[in-house]
Image (cartoon, rainbow, N blue to C red; front, side, top):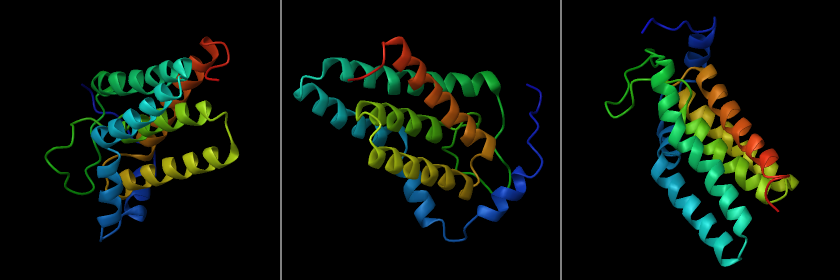
Length: 171
């Protein structure tokens, strides 16, 4: 595939956000891998099923599940290489766009916020979680800012479309 251009300044942003002691950024990255997010999703799903909120459970699974399944395909389709600012761990996938951490977290948070009827504390907490996850990926040099932004936008767009298709979404 042809190399993808980055926006002017994206590399500078990565350098500015880089931290020498990446312990916190790495912990956040580890906690937002698909395995831990899947565990959170199972707890949410179990709670919804115990409360007999069948429509909310189906919405939650479709909201998060489609993003989690499709994001790796989008990375392959786009084929954008990861930043080369710092050495990357060998277990990181080859492509960066859109960010899986950003998309997967946004899908889970977005679906959950809609299930909670967009209550302000849930919205604020969700936004904070997304910002921290995005920061972690940038501070570690694993994604360009546009990778993170694209992950958020596509996941939240999917959850929003799903909400509209299901006649107002969860409830």
